[in-house]
Image (cartoon, rainbow, N blue to C red):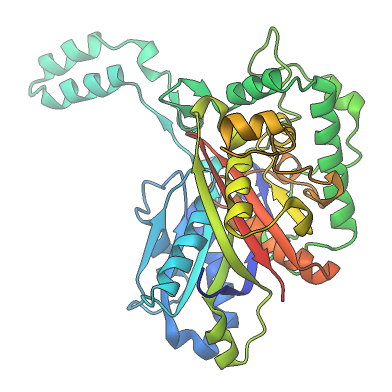
Length: 429
């Protein structure tokens, strides 16, 4: 990029379990809590706000173009336009990179970008049989005609299609995302014990981070129960004292006979919202603003949907090559924990010369990432993965982690359902 994009600040909600403390908040309400707060903190130059861009996967039926609804609910002037982007698991990154491109093209000055997902409120759908039945009932004009149609009703018509399951299943290869993780576990010989250990560490690191108040400056608390005035300060899904014994009791969830991927070593289904405010580095200097960090570059890649979990390996390789960087140049890494098997597979792939030659058109392996630099405060296995929001959360956390630890460079990456990968190069100074 010809100029870095300054990330002025970023905040997020705590993340709630599916059906948990945030389940009563639709995506537009959840997103507006964050955007309103972020906008109110920077109203000194709010008149220069050009646009709002929000990533979201399960568009709420009542709030089409949820970004615009969020903007209007956040007291942002009505003359500021807004639009929604959708790149599956990387929608929260797509919002930020789309904003970056508009700013660099001088089509925008300042943009609020982020992501939101209320997975608890993804609807159940009626089957086509019930739809046909209802259409015929509406067409029937007389009482006798309606009774005739009613006599044809079958209870099976009411069996719902689970929208969440449908959305997590790739239509081109007919595999639910967990099945793609099983493919990688077999391809890279990743054992159940390796996956459970990774999951245990994710929860343990997250628990330690909460005790150390690591997330205090990135989480904007939410009143999760208006009647009782109950405030929610921390992520709901972290299992305190998580251990291998507890994880070992869980049965494989996707391949129930021969599989190794369980609910315990997979990301949790959750609700959450996050947003950042972006401008050119030169604009931040003009305004006398000290950003929390900078976006140097980003990369997206495509691959076989059956192996979608390897997306970060492809996008990381491209990002490093395009910026003349090596693995050793990066201080901190986030590889989104869609599944433990998927993160482990990405690390193994990046450290494999054979994989580099056969898949990345490289002569040598990308490099061996130090495990101590990856997801240092846990990841989506512990916190959850609100698909439209996670990419923004990861970027916020890396930038604030670099400031806290005095680090200079980091990479945020995610696998993407449908066979894609995303990676973003972040800098502190």
